[in-house]
Image 1: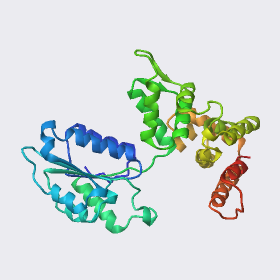
Image 2: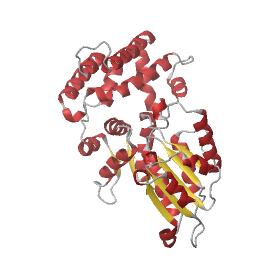
Image 3: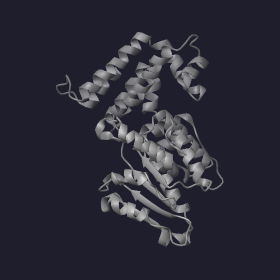
Image 4: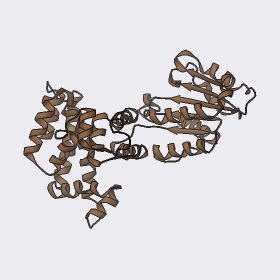
Length: 350
């Protein structure tokens, strides 16, 4: 199965895991990206399930990039299994391994009785600004043709919230919309940490009791204010509730545990980007049309954009986005004498 199609990370992950659960193990897995949760899940499943327990002593080896070279890893990969159908060779932290480029030669002639898993937990081609050379592109395609090439970029908030809801459902609970927003806002786009925080909340329920995660429980267990958070700030800005905006900004500026006002600005920028698209959605611009045009999965998400179109004209939305870009430049030192990040964030909000 070639993992080179333009699938979302979650869809690609599901496809890989579906094959693994069906007992289909490929000779090579190249797992790359910033979001380590998916990479770890794939690697751990292979490590725990590709071999029977009694086969692992002689047929499973785990290397770490800081302590080995790709040459050593590939020497092991070229060996044959002992009294087993296959052997498993895992290289974690592959980006630190010496002679990394030797993997390109191995891919030309993979050993079919070896399952080689390479975990490359950094952004792909970060030094080149995200651009992929033609040589690398061909190499990734070659890996995909022989096995699995899986990219795991950081997810957007809009992608993480459904995963949080799904994770809670799989644990037999429910997570309301507001709580999902609060969690993602506080934890960020680190899936592993997000699921850890959810697990902490789920253990507070007595056996047999409904596991309904509410904003009050999030506030209690995760440590954020139910009334004064980025979700409520966005709602207040969307509805031009100046009094509430002032209350929330004052709280965030004066509460070190809140993470500061500046950390919630990406959520606001994402909203106004989508609002700009909603302004230019094909007529009619009713809730169902906006939902379809923006690719929103739930009806309650549309209400913010209906209110936003009413309260912010297209021209005003463009000016707001331009202000975001100005503030971003000033945080990087351009045309900014001495204003702090928090001061700039406050200027943007008002």
